[in-house]
Amino acid sequence: MKALVYTAPSTVVFRNEPPPKTVSEEVLVKVDAVGICGSDLHAYLGHDSRRVPPIILGHEVSGTVVEGPNPGSKTVINPLITCGSCDDCLDGRTNLCENRQLIGMNRPGAFADLISIPATNLVNIPDSISSVDLAMTEPAAVSLHAVRLADRVLARPISEGSALVIGGGVIGLFCVYFLRDYGCTEITLTETNPLRRKTVEDTQTCKVIDVEKHSVESKRYDAVFDAVGIKVTRETSIDAVKNGGVVLHLGLGSAKGGMDARSMTLSEITFIGAYTYTAYDFVAAARKIANGAIQPLNWVDERPLSDGAAAFQELIDGRVASPKIILRP
Ligand SMILES: [Zn+2]
Ligand SMILES: [Zn+2]
Image 1 (cartoon, protein in one colour):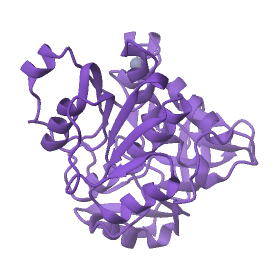
Image 2: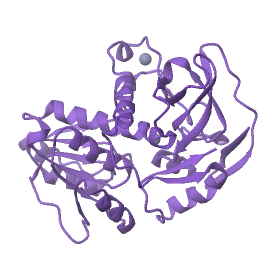
Image 3: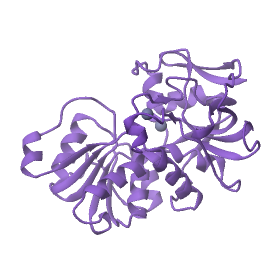
Image 4: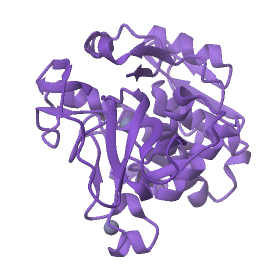
């Protein structure tokens, strides 16, 4: 089969690879559409010690079952493989599973014609839904998880409050979409890349600001979603959130800095690190995409898998207006 293989820092090569070996309990899936994630870019730059080359990256994937139950059916793959028997799995918090594995990290990913995956990781979806839209399920699930956690800790429903989203990549944009789906109408998003800002503005789903020109108001928002996760965005988050509000930290930009514990204590701010999604968040996100609640998705940039190397480089250079490139084998 053909695959886009990460072979060394800043290098992905489109080449022939042996097809996956299917083991028992696993299903062989033909990949129809697969997104390039920020974490794939991070790995590509050689910044992720968990993704060791050579490896096929890619974990945002929709496809068609080739071998296994219901061959020919359309499916979306939950890329987090969890044990099902640890305390966190038993409690439904599968994203915290101590034995979790991610495709494209601990095992081959989906920038390829075919992938093998445990049958329990497949979510079946009506055939009428676009494969490209379905490949957005994974990032959508990340955002849904964060919005759900925020809504749970606020004193009043998020539909009555205001939200700030930092970062106009796909996670930030999907936070906006799910906030709206939860009934929140007062949403501001900040983005520094003008191409990305324009894309978010065109969705007409929130107010968009450039923090280099307009500062973010202090103590203004009930919930702040940091989809960047660097020192300066953490500072902004803690400054912008109201007393008693919640900061959802999703970005993995840098590990340290920007936390004012004194101010967080005095203002009783809840700070939540939000990582991936539970198995049920994933199913819920797939259904939201299938029923059209998460719209518009017309900004998706679709390209052949064979052009993957150029797509990686354009993303690194900040030359892509779309928050998501989807590759098609
Ligand atoms: Zn991802
Ligand atoms: Zn587990």
